[in-house]
Image (spheres, rainbow, N blue to C red):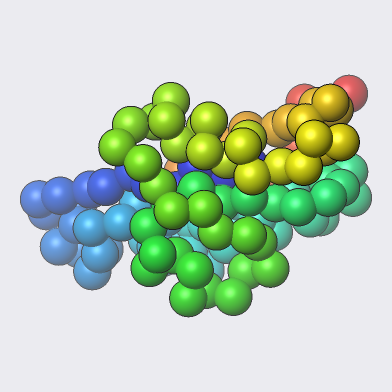
Length: 113
């Protein structure tokens, strides 16, 4: 699960051209796309990748399932977990935030190991 509901404001939002942190561009990709790419590149992510955030992030076509965000971070985590089937809820879940632009498949594997 990737939480992608964070907002930015002020000079940072103005420079980024967005108020949604997940949509900030870095090196030609959004922060959200960079995190999703690292998860898939690890080769260890199985099953659905759930992104919890605003509807605007669904337009990226990232191959993930969007769950519309709630009002708080904890509420977003619960919403994401509730989208999993009962079978999937019995296993492990990996929670990432969208603001990990330097995440790599290798670092995901290190964490999981």
